[in-house]
Structure formats: structure tokens, C-alpha cells
Length: 560
Ligand code: ADP
Image 1: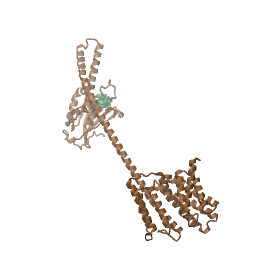
Image 2: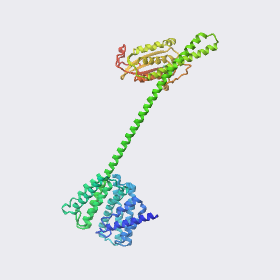
Image 3: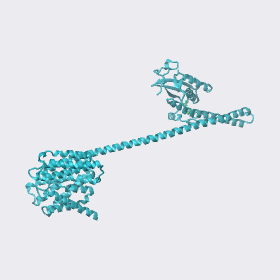
Image 4: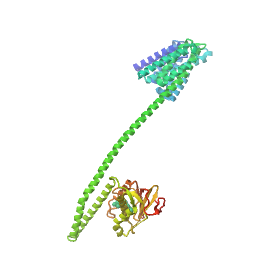
């Protein structure tokens, strides 16, 4: 044991002894049994705050206080054992079921604390009264009244004194504003006044409940530890009055008066401490909610800010990229044209005049240059779709398809293909883009043909406020797993040696449709053909030419 521990033991014993003597000075029914026993609260608080290993200090204090009061060494030992066991068990139960020193943090914990503070004193009362009875110091007939007094005295010590000590030990500093000091002084004065009026003056004997508003005031404006102070103060003042035979608790004997006072105080303590705890708890929850709310708001603000910055940066880099792509493609076009023209000239002049190998090389160069031209043209188209405001006007989709077909005329004719259509509607769109759309879709339908001559059918129907266009073919089809991928830029499923192309066409289609508020997808079965569908907002303009295209018309071509 360290010197500090020894000091604590001795101090505890001395405190217990002094409080015990004070309590026993109010013993009327039996020198060892008093209705006011603060040491129970001191012992309980000490073991909860400092640890149960300090029980010997309590044992020593209890033994000395009793040995110097009544009975003999044996009865004092019995009583001291009872007092120590009560404190040990009480502290253990409160730690286990009421959160120890946090017993006043929630109504449920306080309830468990009160249960422990009411039940554990049964040990002390039984062992104490039993020892005295065995020693012949308590007559058989008085056993019950001595036992009851003992038990009540310990209960009020546990319920009034222990909370006071624990609460102030948990939070010993005061950080009141000047006005609060003033209010605290007011409460003190009111407590004194009420105690004097109610507990001392015969005309107001029945007004004991006037102490309630002061406790409620304290609970609301201050807190738990201050409420505990006012409670103890009221107890002290009422005790003084009652012992002088005054106040509402005065009965035929001082012993009975004290019992009545204790009962009153225990009930007031129970209800007003509960109130103080509930108010405190409410405040905690309110504060936690406010903090969480503020934190959330701050996080949302930061997130919005960073999103805004990111989107600005993204927009800038997108713009840079668009300008770069447009400028690069544009500037590349000019020298490429030159190469293509000169090599064509070269071919016309020297073809068949050097040797077969030279002819072949020239062929490669011509092919490479024309592929490069296409690639640059497609890239330029792609980058242009995202730029500037779109010039929108009513576009007759029949005419857009006508234009696309005429630019594809040679390839359609070469493979013996055929393009059929239903009557198509007018839409509000950019005409150039609509022609490009059909060019790519019909061009692909012709290009990715199977063995038989390609048959392409274009149709449109109206559904849920939009037009759904379909371009169906009888070509090689697409595996469903690639249905999404083919709309990405440079995504191709076949080697260039089999099917020429740049891999930009469908990406361009998707971009065009996104800009028009539409979308595109494909439905296909490999080997049987594909149907590309795209949507455009229904502009409300009348369909170009046919009643069959009125919005409500069902179409056999219905897709998803
Ligand atoms: P490109 O036609 O230049 O290769 P696209 O972006 O137009 O590029 O098409 C991407 C890929 O989608 C094509 O390479 C092809 O594999 C597939 N595809 C497009 N249209 C069809 C179609 N009608 N039938 C079968 N496959 C197609």
C-alpha cells in the first residue's frame, strides 16, 4: 500500500467517523440507530469514485464510531461489517447496472441507482440490528422499529449524499456568468426563506410542498449538481426545525418526526433529481443534434464547394480538349489534302510505268491517305457536335434520310442493297446532325451485311412524349454483350481488313442524340440482323405526310 493510499484510508475513516458521530447525535430510538445516516452516502460515493479497494477505511471508521457509542467490541465489529458490506455491494451493483460515476447521466441509470440505494441498506440494517440484538442491546420487542430506522437512515444517506458527492466530483468547476451568480444567490435566499416559512412557522405548517418550485427552478436553470445541493440544504434546514419540534413533520416523538421528514425528503429527492436528470439529458441531446446538424451543413457546404470547383475544372479541361481536337483536326486536314492530291497526281502519271511493286506501294499510300482523311473528318464532326449552340429547326426526317441515302448511293448500289421506310415525322432538331445520324446508321447497316443483299428499313413511332426511330437490317448482327460498348469512341468489333471504318460513327450518333435530349440503343441477334433505335423529343409538329404516324398509332416495329 502506498503512503497516498494509506492517507486516503485514514481520511476516509476520519470522515466516516465525523459524519457518523453527527448522525448518531440525532439518534433517539437507540444510541446506535439513527434516522439520519450520511456515512452511507459518503462510503458509497468514495468506493464508486476511488475504487472498492478502499473498503478498509470505511470499516475502520464504522468500527470506531460504534465502539465509542454503545454496545461492545463484538457488536461494533458486526455493525462495521454490515456498513462495509452495504457500501461494497452498493458500489458493485451501481457500477454494474447504473454506470458507476455516470449514474446520473440518464433516468434509467438513476432508477437503478435508487434501487441499489434502497435495497443495499437492508444488509447494514439487518447486520447492525442483529448484532445489537444478539449482544442483548436491543430488546426483542424493539427489533423492528430499530431495523426500520436504521434502514431509512441509510437510504436517505445513499439517495441524498452520494449524488451530491459524485456529481461535484465529476464536475468540480463553476463557469457561471455574473448573472448566473446572482441567480444562484437568489435561489439560496429563496431556499432559506421557504425553509424558514414552511419549517419554522406554525401558520404555514402544511406548506412543505413550497420547496418544490425552488428545486424545479434549480433543475431548469442550473443542473443536477446544483439540485443536489439545494436538496441537501433543504434537508439540513428542515432537520434543524424538526429537531426543535417545529414544522410540518413534528410528531409525538423526535424519532417519529425524523422518520416523517426522511420519507418526505427521500420522495422529493427522487422526483426532483429525476427531473434534473431528464432536463440535463434533454439538453445533451439537443446539443448533440445541433452539433450534428452544423457538422452536416458544413460538410454539405464543403462538398458542394469542391464539386463546383471540380465541375468548373472539368468544364475547362473539356473545353480545352474540344478546342484542341477541333484545331488539330482542322490543321491536319490541309497538309493531308495536299499529300492525297499529289499522290493521286503521281499515280495518274506513273501508274504502270515503273514496276508492279511501285504500283502496289502507291496503292497503299493512296489508301492510307484516304483513311486518314476519313478519320480526320469523323473526328472533326465528333468534336463539333459538342461545340456552340445548336441551330434547331423543324426537320422533315424523310428529307434527312433522302440526303443520307444519296450520299450512300454508290455503296448501296454496289452491294445490291435496298432501303425502305415508313413515312417519317418532322422533329425539332439540327438538320445536319439528323443527316449524319442516318448516314452512320444506314451506312453501318449496309457495311455490316451478311451473305445476302442488305435490306434496311427505317420507321418511327410515337410513345410517351417522344419519337422512337428504328433502323433495322438483316446483317451480321451484334452479340448482346457488345451492345453498350459499340457506342464508345474508337470501339470496333472487327478487323479493318474485313470492314473498314474509324470506330467513331456510333459515338457520334450518341453524342448527337444526347445533345437533342434523346438516346440510342441496339437490339440484335448475331446472324439475323440488328435494329438500332433512337429517341427524339416529340415537338408537337404534325407528322410529315401521313395520318398513320399520328402519335397514338401503334407500330408493328415496337421495341422496348
Ligand atoms: P465503324 O462503323 O467506323 O467501325 P461505328 O462506331 O459506326 O464504327 O460502329 C462500331 C462498331 O459497331 C462497328 O465496328 C461494328 O462492329 C458494330 N456495328 C455498328 N453497326 C452495326 C450493324 N448495323 N451491324 C452489325 N454491327 C454493327
